[in-house]
Length: 303
Ligand SMILES: C[S@@+](CC[C@H](N)C(=O)[O-])C[C@H]1O[C@@H](n2cnc3c(N)ncnc32)[C@H](O)[C@@H]1O
Image (cartoon, rainbow, N blue to C red; front, side):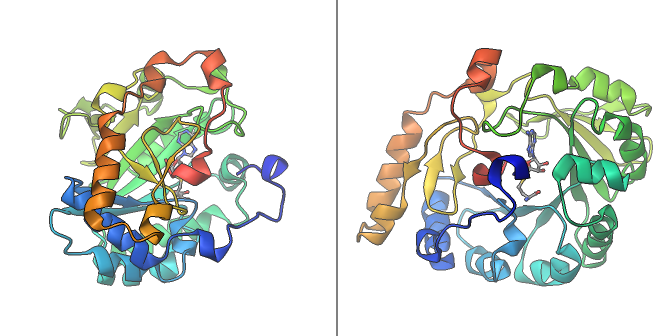
């Protein structure tokens, strides 16, 4: 959320507009009844949602749900790691774009030092999360000089490092193709001898490698090698809109039916109808013209 676009005093949605934890849990049950196996809490910053660990406790044990993950910027992870683990969170992803403090701040405009994120990662390891996934978005001329340092720092078996091609999500991040460091170049610049790994499952987004340190490094080539065909992700915003693609301009409102007395079966039918018509393949069709079309922001959709 660049300050020059959003202003310094970010506007938050009024409380009544965001789904309550109970409404979120109900939707998780409905999605799981339709076959959802994996849930990721993201944002925005999910650890800023008061009592997010209570939501994890509420959805843990939902029939069919096998995996609960959370993506965070790590700013309050030191304080929250143990509670998240105790609530039943299975997996944690921490976003970290650089080890150098100035580069870290240049990438994410954060008002906290990189040391705080590194402390959060250590706290999460101590709380029992392992491996921890580290997401690094690579932007040419901003943090690409950190590729080798990040690859070395997180090459151990307790980490899964993901290096992500910078994407044109939303309209506020000033994306240009020239900012993208292609996956092949990222792999080379790790300066590690990488052994390719087979995909874990069909539709997996990362090209995966074993690192010499016994860890895993994956490169998400969403720009140079799009994977729309294998994408099975549904995204739900904090105010209850269902997006069928990370690059859509609009979502489908689930909050109104949720609050207007619709039954679980009604909502399941609504979701099934939306999902059945899904034909998004933005990344396969991407051009500099499509990049300029209106799209929902990353801060709404969570990645
Ligand atoms: C939008 S954040 C939301 C969760 C949380 N606030 C965080 O920082 O991890 C989710 C992920 O999207 C990644 N991301 C953000 N902008 C991106 C872009 N333009 N291209 C690729 N990945 C991006 C972030 O690095 C992060 O790992």
